[in-house]
Image (cartoon, rainbow over all chains, first blue to last red; front, side, top):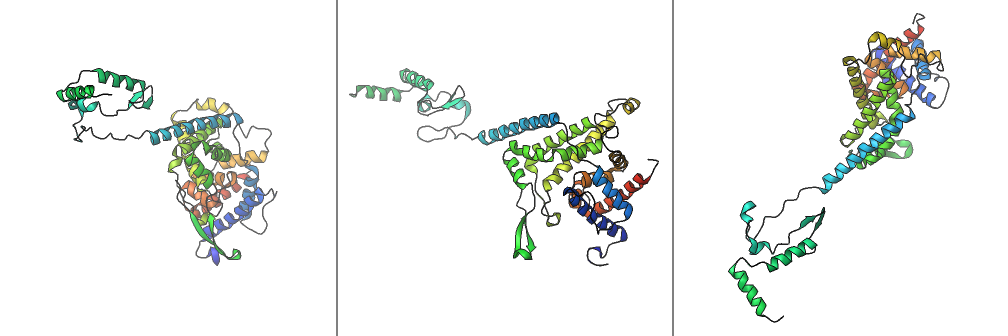
Length: 171
Length: 208
């Protein structure tokens, strides 16, 4: 034995011959030939069975209704996957920087911030209104907040003194 | 994303080595991995093959449809994890996506079989008298030879039957069948050879 058959037992050799015959047979079948290839020679019963199966086992197609219904289910699933992917890409959580006083000192987070009006009024805090992210300085709510803040009596003596000086200056 | 899988193939007649594209479905798969809506092209391409495999295995139209639907939904959901593993021995036309898809189909069919045994939908004696919606044996438009081949395939044990269905109905190469069944190519060749001998005996037996 030589070539591809070297070192194989008789079962493997027979199986290899059958395999090559099937390659040629199915290729001929795909070309529309009505008989198997000549020259390849598996045992006659195997060859007969292969010829019968190649000719008599049809490929089946499901109903058009099933095909379209499954296509619709797949399209829905694909749309959900796209939405989920988009949400994952846009919705990443970005940590806010720690709050700081006007002179740059970091403040502790949480309830300790309550009452720190002197520096909090100077922070441009974004507001979420009606689902749209906007700036307090530009939004209506922001304008109302600034007007309220300016008319509110100042909390500290320093701020009151600064405003008194500002009022004495000519406009 | 699928990893690059280009291999050098010596073609002296073309003036030296060249790069062969090993997975014929690569463009479709990458498009679907980028945009899941484009999975439809793969679905349309392989629907009949997957359905045929399921129908020959389960021999029931509704169960085959169910297994087909589960196969494609699972393939879409897991497409991001699919990784091309083509080898030069698979040939230029080999499609590792098809092997991966049929591995899913094989699992879906096995699951359907398990459900059938756990929860039979009708008593066995009643089921024997009810024809399947598509019954190849009863379909007068089909040739007797088709019914005989259908019966002969149905009498084969598990992997022999699967190997012949994949070889003759889905026209897979031995390498692809080996990938689907999780066996070596040599084992698949022997499996098919023995299955064909069984079919030859069956078709020759006048009592069948």
